[in-house]
Length: 351
Image (cartoon, rainbow, N blue to C red):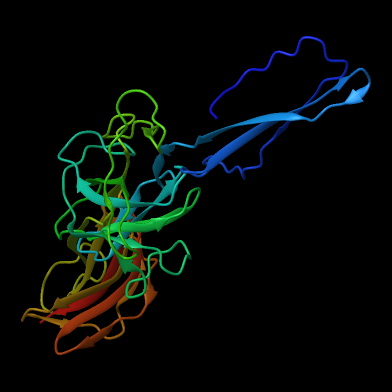
């Protein structure tokens, strides 16, 4: 029975026992569990033990729908223009007291402040959601499984999901794409299929399993709506290179190095200065080529790579390297970090 009171007027001894054993988890006792509590009365009359009396109370545990969606980490995902298969990670945790499915949507916001600062100003292409199939916390193309819902997630269990897309070419440093993952609780359905939408129980408690939404508000959904959401973002960091080619007269066959002039036989030193704007990413494998015009002849073994500049002056601190073939000076500079300038220097004579 649901409740009963006993009043014992003149009992010499009264003993009361309550019994109940239901496993407890962080999400709470499983919905639909029957909890029975039995009280037993032992007593005597005139020193003689009498038959005990007992009664129990049973109720069914209702269903609490609760979940969280949270980005993994606390920093933006750094990307470069044209990069494909870039991933940001989220966890979805079922804090309900029942096994549930969860419908998933990944959306891109239109403007506004992004999750880690800056203003959303572009969208990824080809956005999909993948489940961390091998559980290593890293997106593995070809291994992790594309999903539109989480199937049969146990109470207190979590899964890692990746929102994956590609960065359009032409984006510049500090462009930001904000991404939002929303999970919505679903019920029933066979394993491998998404369950139906869930609604709360209206009105007073019933004898069956009632449903209560207990989720907190997400970044884009209200509290107690059976859903939760969180944002992450991608920030572009790229190199912005500029090139400045200049020349100086080293000597001529008449004046030597004293006030030389650009007469036939004069030696000219060219400096190709590659600068990378501050605030971006390093540029790597920078291939430089310069086709010599008619009227000048390359001076053999004169190429110097990876030199520096002071103001507008190219320093003579590069290392020997590069090639000359088909009347073209070529060389590779391994890296130019943001805010730095590196040079390729070579000499030629005036024909």
